[in-house]
Length: 306
Image 1 (cartoon, one colour):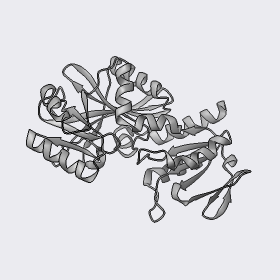
Image 2 (tube, helix red, strand yellow):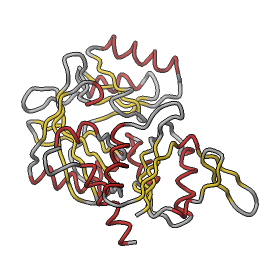
Image 3 (cartoon, one colour):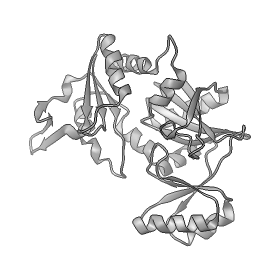
């Protein structure tokens, strides 16, 4: 297999350690693995064809059997995907596809999709104007979560404890960008009274790992990158079923499904199309299991089925 791993790593930075480990593991298994920084591609378009360059050298997407897409959609457009489109034009499979990533990345859209599946989700309200605040106060109780509809790693997620904090935070957001759309959500408490959630790692329609993330003393968010502790988790049959249902509905081959285990059962927060590898690898790694090896094997299997 000739595998290309497309990343959002900027030119002046090195690739993340787990991306380098993916290359090492893939080559150890006999595959050819190349790592790419998205910003180092250039595209030339004319009336006849498109020509792709990498570091100023001609680049043929058809040289690759499969692409692992580790790009992050940072904005509300999908402009970064002009590179991915060149691979798909050649019939090269891309995991995950741009369409599935865009659906998952939009937190508002993803909540609408999960709601249609009948799973329990975080109760949420859209805020677009000052008048909406009164409606929120009638239906929600503090503390509340304020969340940007495009965010990751817990970024653009705030916790407010009273009306003064809510109003001042909203004023500040709209002072920066009056067109900003954001969510107000219930603050869900875990059944064990910790500030924690579960991340379920799904690969090719199969759950291959799950971890419980518990926040640090310095942050209310339970993201590994923000200091949360992680531990391997055992899921109930119902949790497994609902996580797989969600990933299937979004069309994601690689997905991270997040939920809180509340006193009333799982409450789903979001789905991630580009789930981080550090935390889940640390929580599930053992002498005979490495989630990175599973990813390489899955890509090889998909290539052979093509």
